[in-house]
Amino acid sequence: MVRLLAALAVPLSLVVAGCAPKAASTSGGDVQPSSVSSDVASQGPVTLKFLDFEEGGDADYIKKAIAGFEQQYPNVKIDRTEQSFDQVMSTLNLRLADPSGPDVATINNGWQSMGTLSKAGLILNLDKYAELYGWRDQMSSTMQRQLEFTPDGKKMGEGSLYGTPGARLTTVGLYYNKKLLKDAGVAVPTTYAEFEAALATVKSKGETPIALGTQEKTYATNPLFAVQSLLGQPKAINDFVYGAGGTTLEQTGLGTAAAKLSEWQKDGYLNPGYNGLDFDGGKKVFTDGKAAFHFDYSGALVGTGADASEFGRLQLPQPEGGAQTSVGAASAVFGISAKTQHPDAAAAFLNYLSSQPMNELAVESGYLPIRPVTTQPKAGTVFADEVSGAAAVTADDGFLPFFDWASPEMLDVIGGQVQLILAGRSTPETLVTDGQKSYDDAAAKRG
Image 1: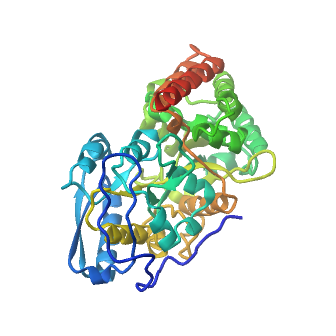
Image 2 (image 1 turned 135 degrees about the horizontal axis):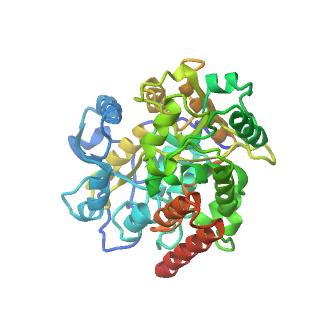
């Protein structure tokens, strides 16, 4: 079982070494604060510049988090800048290299963002703060791995922490239409075998089993990664994505999952015109009641106008062993600029963003929390299914990384192959070959 819920509150008198430090210089490579302290209140007036890409309802949540932190630390002011995800990601390296840039920023997992920033010495190594605040004791090991890089920047999934998760989680899972299953005489599946049997039964009743839209490469991978998490071996998936060595793409079960999608397409299990629909178009087929199942991110039905009580979400176990697994990651990951003059205050802010009160606020705001909570969503709703499903995955330490983290081009390569396979113009074998080449090329460039 995973270690969970160590108290996030740390007495202000707890000091690991010295008083509030300035960050180390950033000539490249691993950067750590010389000493760390949780005594933020004694530092006098502090302003932290915070860059994030939270918009709409997400922005409301972040604003509440900032207000709560500033109430706890009246001497600290958070100066927030909000931009779109693309704007933040395309400019983040330059901004963090600027001495007047943000102190705290939302960063992204994988080689494209966190790996590049850590290797360049643009974000702090957070190991000393992790020890100070007990961050590792508050995360499952599969979640920690998503935030780790070796100080030389050559390996992901081991080494030091360079980011912390906020209190919200996103997973890829399977939604179902309660009424359609009931009318077809199908019980809600509890295993993968029952799910496949349900697909055949729904089809035999003249209904569409699975709704999806594959016009966009990015989202065409949703069903592929979800099925891989059920049919593949979790250790092989983790080892491949994180570059642990000795594992090929074929061993991860991605080819098996692709073959399953191809089989479903040939059996007529997909909605008509799926290849001409974008992500939202495929979702609308499902929310309009025209398909029994839909693979999507958690929170997918929010804002669609769908009655949350008419739909449910499944957290299917692995066929062998019964473990609960899911592709999942923090909705937002936060890092500290290596150039900040206030690393202790910045670390306290990161600590607050992942705190138990923020997890409770996540549920109250309709977001999936990253850790178990006492606040309970309304029973019988999709959200209640999502929360209980995530808790089950956490309990089994079953979070799997998004497979495209394995190389900078992996999402484009695999997404394009899914489109071609479902159009009858490629094969699972080609997907495996092309994905492996992308992985090998990226590994060679990293040295």
